[in-house]
Image (tube, rainbow, N blue to C red; front, side):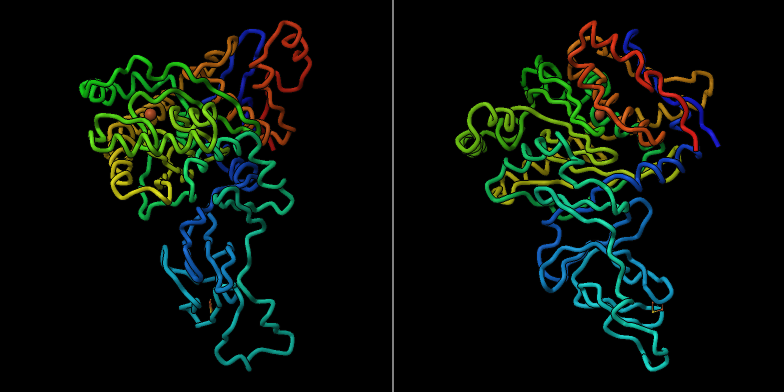
Length: 447
Ligand code: FES
Ligand SMILES: [Fe+2]
């Protein structure tokens, strides 16, 4: 089985191309399941979702049914949602609180720490049957960073904080906005997009599309009297290692955390200013400004996005087929936010990023349009070269190359190098020194 060359990465010429087969081939998707989703840390949920003992969320992560739960001892755990008897799902609700789970098939019963505590007519089993061995199976790895829980199916994967690399600093910039920590607001947006999952990874950190695709929103904001001349300017794009990347830019359209905006109403001004001043006092002017006055769209490889924009959206997406994905989005907010400011935030969340908002339908349309365009089957490569030979700007594509290089390394099973770092600091000698590297033109996803 071979899928051919997927990436062209020619830094001398400033050319980066992605084979469109990567978006349409079922063979590629099967490889992604084995070599990416089975080999990466994957977001499971936020600590705030499980407020107390017994609270659980049912999640499907990389096609595996899981339960994310706190036991009566308060510990966070992740189990495979399958009965150790003959397989039935033991948890059949998306969320709730439970002391025990009784399998509906033959009534084996497990406690919320995963132990098998009840087997009808246990005497029917022989002497080799050990109840202690038949508890729910925990996922191989579970770890959290600043309240964000991740799982991994590879027991030998590097520690989460090493995996997150530079992305950890950007999670800090989000979490530190609150004195008491962050929480996921109950409720989710769920929708499907008829497009390859990687198109949403690209789109979520694509500053280039912002102005043309979301013109309706900019016009709406401009009509409110906001000076939009700085939108999508300044800031920049960064690769954060291991395929993670971020774009940042100033936020002329307001942030409930710190930047007042006519949409929020005159009466919100003092509160927003005092929140901002407290953040600056805690973190200093420089870091404080970055937290409050800049937006950031953060991609944590492979499929977690944190859009810290006019609200904070946590978004995860899974391939259903090469040309179909399922998206779930949650809203993250400071625990200490007043009801009024939270209402403002939720309004911003739905106005821009909700499934019926100003932005998401535009993005869905764009992604589905790309996928339809791939069906032309006449243009083999997509171009992602923008900004390859200059300092990366928010509207460049370095951050997408970071994603694709990591993707390609994993698919090929070759070590990943943070090539974007050399791209960012390119000098003639450094460019020359890359010539002999394997994968200058990355060849061959094959197995
Ligand atoms: S499958 Fe669960 S008790 Fe039989
Ligand atoms: Fe967009």
